Image (cartoon, rainbow, N blue to C red; front, side, top):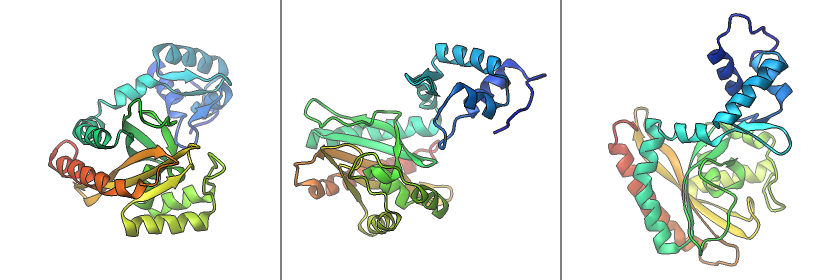
Length: 258
């Protein structure tokens, strides 16, 4: 990001975009001074723009005073053809899995070094989870995240494993062990977690493959979360695989997605 540059000659729009552009996967939450520095503008200008963007819903101010991207930008992002098609195509399949299991079902895509949750189906019988539509959670600590990380380029894997964060006492943060888990996920075709993101939960996830201009590849991950006392986690893998194949097949037919 630019730093220290003056704002003379810059339009209000360009300055507002510079504020939004200060955020990235490595800095999802920023203070006023950090935003001003990364956007290259005085504190007073940044403060005024932050107030306007927060009032509109583009940003949210946290209790600690830092800012993060707001829900309204997420809602607009869902209108992008790829995200819109993905959610529309996948929704019936997620509902089928939830109807069959009564558990929380997730669909996520990789965004930088995070798993971005684009759809979720849950009910009163589902175990409480931290993820919501629009959540960005660590790739190494979630079932869908491990599936996406296993299919990610080497540079992404290296960056994630360089400094994995601990969400619970059960989160695996040892790089060697994580690499072995990713290799197993590629071999088995699924990934699982045990209380690594939320205590009291287990998860399992499978990749969603679809045809793209560059050839077939993993475009999303489909996962399910169950209470930690459940012992039938692996029996859910075939259910997820059937749904993932259906999603991938339909996505491969959607021209705007391709």
